[in-house]
Length: 248
Picture 1 (cartoon, rainbow, N blue to C red):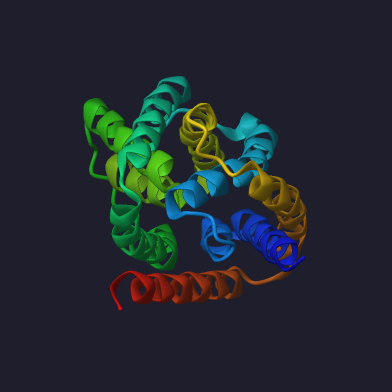
Picture 2: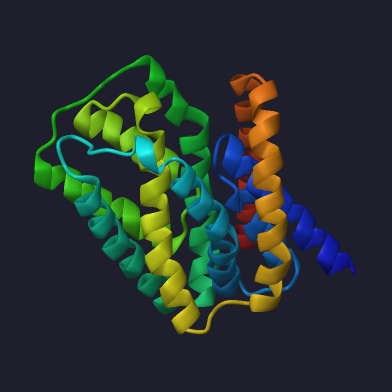
């Protein structure tokens, strides 16, 4: 019963966070660890559990998705999916003890993205990267999405601002679509490799869908800065605890 309450609550919070600002894995991943799921399996299971919510979001926003920096969304999706597959394979090859040491640093990167990524709304710093530079960067972001994925969407938007001069407010549909592209490849791989704790997924996933629905409505009533501060506070606390867990 305690496990049910823990995972359902974490799933609801994760879905709400993803709907409002992103970073839902900061809630679902540590909850799975607390429930006794090994770290690598917890990461894979978190990705699978949160996947349906992202898929629904991408379907809703599909009409607003277009090319980025002159590169078609179809090509970017393919590159991102290959990256997601590579990241998933890399996760499978990472020993559990090594992953325990890596996770706090990945969480720190994601926390910084959550804290400062949105500030790019104030400065368009496009560098006019080449087509190959944009594709290469997107592939690496796909690898990150498949390997861990925390705040991957915010990292993508930040990269597009720097590499293609994109307007952050105009690429939210692309962000959702390409995060799903990375996760699609990773989720298929995790399922085929049998490293998903399906019992936990069945507890987290429905709650995440409910949280996403509620979070979308609550987000409309809250000031964006309030949502961002709360999300970054949660992310920072989780990051600190994982550093203590790994290195103390």
